[in-house]
Amino acid sequence: MSGRLTRLKKIASGLTLFAVSSFILLALLELAARILLPGPQFDTRLPLYPYVEQEREVVLPGIASQSRYSTNRWGFRGEDPPEMWDEAFTVVTVGGSTTRDYYLDDSKTWSAILQDELRDTSPDVWVGNAGLDGHSTRGHLILMDEVIRDVNPDVVVLLVGVNDLSISFSQAEVEAYDLKTAHPLASSRLFSALRIVKQIALDGVYVVDDVGGYTDFEPAIAEEDIFTPLPDDLREVLPSLPLFRDNLNRIIDLAEELDIQLVILTQPALLDDTPYWDTVWGKAYWVEEQSLQISGATFWRMLDIFNQTALEVCAERDVICYDLASNIAHSEENFYDFVHFTEMGSQRVGEHVARVIESEVMK
Image (cartoon, rainbow, N blue to C red; front, side, top):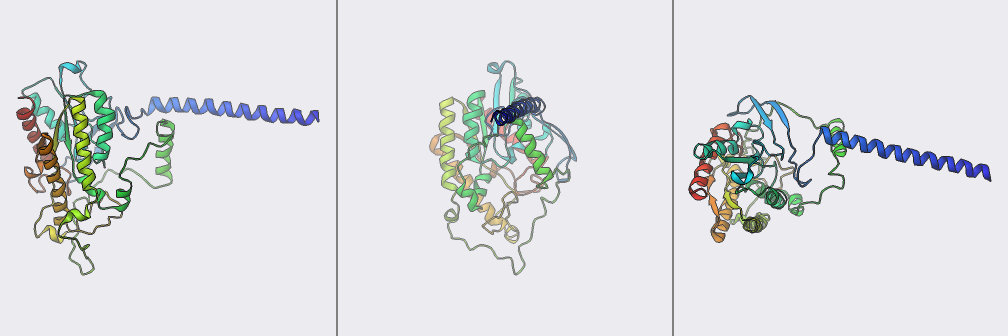
């Protein structure tokens, strides 16, 4: 009997030693991962990673082949925030990929152009780019509450519309419209690193330098290409539209609570309501299994509904709203795909937004 107890004690002791050693090892690996791979500075649902440095080769029309992508200590694109924060005129730009401008060089994003334009007359201006790919107003609400509340800039510029529209193209996205809670291990840098390894090794996810093909607009003229029948009032097939309106109002409420000046921009596009775009598929390539089969012209008409809704909300709430969509031409000079800006398009956006801030905010 005593021999059996002795063996059990040895097994228990060995398991305890293994558990403690494993815990210490994981803790050390987590510490190393946090040193080498700093995590998001704010909410784990907002992938704002600090001090990212990338040099890239890009194959897209209207964009330089060599570009640099970097982030500051907050995970924004742009310079580090000024040391004398309260003495500077501070602006944060918020939006999806058309704000982040991922493929453009740091100096060519419309947020960087905005800073350059404003500094011509006010050297103490700082602009941080908090754009996040794929984010709609549901994500902007979190960013306003978790980031803007903390950093407290003078102005937030919000470019909205296309990602909220895209939610209506996928029933799965509509059903999952509310932001999911963060994964229990989302704050672990070791978990994040292992997930990246898993994606590359098992899921076949990889990074490519050549991102061409975005502008290969697919004709929709073959006999088998049949568009989804739609009602006269397109609002009937846009279930994310009421949510978009509600989120804009909630964002405005937050800006008022925080005493931050809000400037809302409508989303321009290459697409237009013309016979040519009636012959091209209006596919949002960033949406998996798009449920609505529509033309490029219909895509634009739907986006215009979201733009007009933004203008209506701004008028109702007495908020500055600039109709950027009406002031950036539907031209391949300005866009390399349906909605993303070339360097020329970005330059024009930055200049327009600068004039709005100078005339409406800094007056």
